[in-house]
Amino acid sequence: MDKVRVGVIGIGNMGSYHAKYIDNGEIYGAKLTAVCDINPNRLKWAKKNLSEDVALFDSIEALFESKCVDGVIIATPHYDHPPIAIEAFEHGLHVLIEKPAGVYTRQVREMNEVAESTDRVFGIMYNQRTNPIYRKVRDLVKTGELGDIKRTIWIITSWYRPQSYYDSGGWRATWAGEGGGVLLNQDPHQLDLWQWMVGMPKRVRAFCYFGKYHDIEVEDDVMAYVEYENGATGLFVTSTGEAPGTNRFEISADRGKLVVEDNKLTFWRLRVPERQFNAEWKGGFGEPECWECDIPIEGKETGHRGITQNWIDAILKGDTLLAPGTDGIKGLEISNAMHLSSWIDNWVDIPVDEDAFYNELKKRIETSTFKKKKQDITMDVDDTF
Image 1: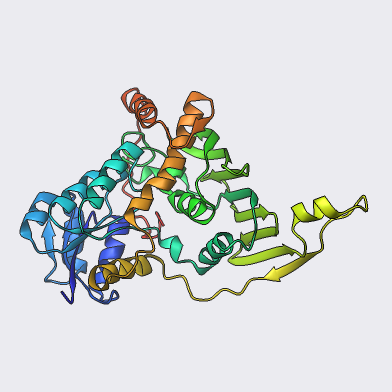
Image 2: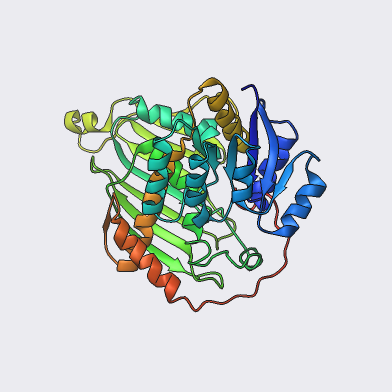
C-alpha cells in the first residue's frame, strides 16, 4: 500500500476541516475517498466543496460495506466515538478518533480492548501533543531534571464561549447529547497533556458548577484538587465563562519551578535542590539560589495535520504513534472522576468506579427537563479545537 484511502465519518465543524486538508493533498500518503454524515445538508456541502471522486454516504454501514476506505477519521458527537470505532475495527479498518475518546470509561475500555485485539492502527486527535513546549515539559519531567514533583497547577479559562455557541446545536451542553460540558468538550486536551506530562493522580475532589454562566445543564466552571502517589498535589481550574481567560501551567518540584504561559516555557532552577538545602542550611532565614532559565524549544506545532500525518505514517511505515487511541481513556478517567466527585460531594479514587459514574450519568440523562431552542448559526471550524 502506498496510499491510505481515508473516509471521514461526521462532517460537521471538525470533520469538514479534516476532510478539506486531506482532500487538498496536505497529508502525504493519504487520499480522501469518502465522507459520511446523516445530515443531508452536510452531504450537500461535501458535494460542493470536495473532489468529485469522493464518495458520499448517509450511513456508516453503507460506507463500511463499500470497501472504498482503508481507515476512517471519526468526528461525530462524543457518545458515538466508541461504537463506530468498534464497528470500523470489525471491518478491518484503521481508526483515528476525535477527542474525547468517549463519555464514560466503561464504553471506552471496551473500544480499547477491541482495538488491541486487532493489528489496526488506532490514534486519537490529541493535536496539542505536537506542541514542542509541552513535549519539552514532558522531557524535563521524565528525565528527572525537575526532581520529585510537589505540585501542579493548570488554570485554563481561555475557553470562553457565548450563549450562541451552545445554542448552535441541540446536542450541545446536554447530558444526553454531549455527556458533559467544558470537561468533555474543551478540556480533553489539557487533561490528556496533564497526565501525559506528570502522570495520573490517585484521587480527585472536584467542584463542578452546572450552568453557572450559561443557560445549559452541564458544567461550565470547575475547580478540582488531585493527589498523586508520591504525595504531590494538583489543582485544575477551568471555565467557559471568563473573559479574558488564562492558560497557565505550573509545576513546582524539588529542583525548581516550571511555568508555561503565553507560548513560553520558563524554568526557575534551584542551584541546590530544595530538600537538600532544607537539610543542610543552618543559617535561619534563607533559600536556595535560583536561576531564571529560558528553555530552548525546537520544532513547531503541527496540530491536527501532524496527528493525521503521524497516523498515516504509522499505517504505511510503522512509525510510533504520538497519540495512541488507547491513551484516550486516561484523560477521560480524570474528567469522569471530577464529575462523580462533584455529584456525590466526596473524594473519588482513580481508577474511577465505572458503574458508579455510569449510573449517576444515567440519572441525569433520564431526569433531564432541560429544553433549548436550536438556532441556525454557522460555527467557525476552530470551535472545538
